[in-house]
Image 1 (cartoon, one colour):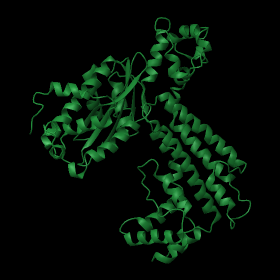
Image 2: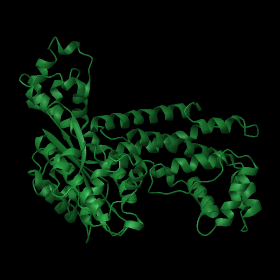
Image 3: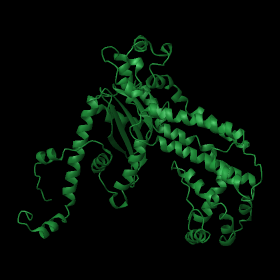
Length: 476
């Protein structure tokens, strides 16, 4: 109205007027419901869908179960959306998770089109008797259950974190930064500035955060020369034993090894942390890293430090011992390889399906399910298809529904599978900011709508929301 009368100053004042909290809530609810209805239509329309779920405690100590759905359609396009967020006010046992999941999935007709369910490694999820997995099997739900590949990869570095050198590093960091040590922390930062160190501070270690160990070790190794004089000058307790460790070649060698290995594990973790990755993509990345571990092992046996930059820095230092033998660390690489082989046994059950999905032209026909064998015979003899360069998802898009119905159906099912709970983990980061200490009394309904809006990739039709509003000009 002000603009109509060419009163620009008044128009600016109107634009700065804040909406009432009731108006904001109504609009959040309207947009959230529109996204939810769009999501439900997509799930019902999809050829297959998979689920991933994870549970965490919010600001007000309520356990929140996040359920995401990945839908795949006949044209092989996929969508990942928040299915539901279920507050668990009582216990968080397997039966509680199962009941919440079943209630949610029953809204779209049950588990008939569900291709897989991805969970974290909590006993309430993976337990074969009273956990979610066991209860699913007990109730006749036979779709594959996948333990989050990212979680398993993070757990494979557990032996490194139990190493005595790693524990010593954490002890020193906690001595300087842990608890009520603000003065010591300030002194450290000033000391590092005065000595022109590579970094200006140490990082605290958090065992819950996937990347914490690698980042913490990288920072500590970079300022390892500044740590002993600081301990000697500023720490009141006797730190002689700790200072002497920095003169021990074996301690420094192990420090460098853990730094490099945890950084390699961080690189793996980051490559797995993306939305819209299929289980085939994640298995490929993980198998690639397992191959790298074998390269690391054989290289260290020959004292080849190409893949270990911290080892190289240590070997090139003027005061270091000549001809340091790093080959003994190859046995520790073997321990990590053993952990990967042990933890990823459930992924091995998908190996045949992943190989077929990635390269159906090169797959062994005898190793495939009977319902796919005859179609594979025709596929591998098709003169048009054998000349194509596409792989995986792009190849299955080429298949005729009339000639290769079972193979096409197999491709749709594999495309729909979640391989990790990364999308849940990233959503918990959103929840931390949405339900913060200043908004800890959000209702379950409002939190659900806000979470849906913060994670959705669906476009909202604002025009239809305006047209459908009963009182679009409501002021309170």
